[in-house]
Image 1 (cartoon, rainbow, N blue to C red):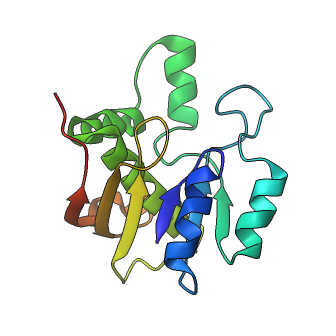
Image 2: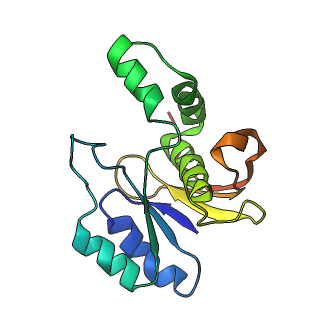
Image 3: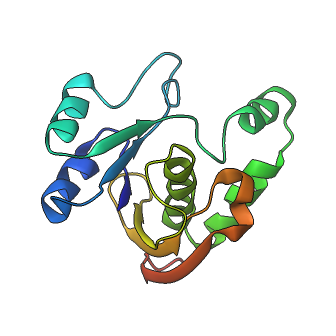
Length: 154
């Protein structure tokens, strides 16, 4: 189980449902909202880890250097084009795919077993995918097996 959680609130809500299972909580990278700021407070991280969750804080699979190019020169790189394409299905779908890549790259989930991934649009989780993860460098091996829930798009 992989859940996106910027502040840790969604991760804490997931803990009781996945007690005793491999729960990975993926936070924003430091500096995502403001330079030098980590949205997931140390106390919340400690609570998640005390409950058995593993917390992953790293660069976003669809962000990083490509985002820097966009901000500096106003042009898009491949990662952000992939992210915008996934957003056609909703922000939560993009987030669920992205956190699967990040958790697989960190070695926290297997690329050989299906994984439940929860993502969201703004605050909380509104999307659940069952997918077979892949590492970022083998992105096209990732398989969305089922879209369990996602909000209706207008």
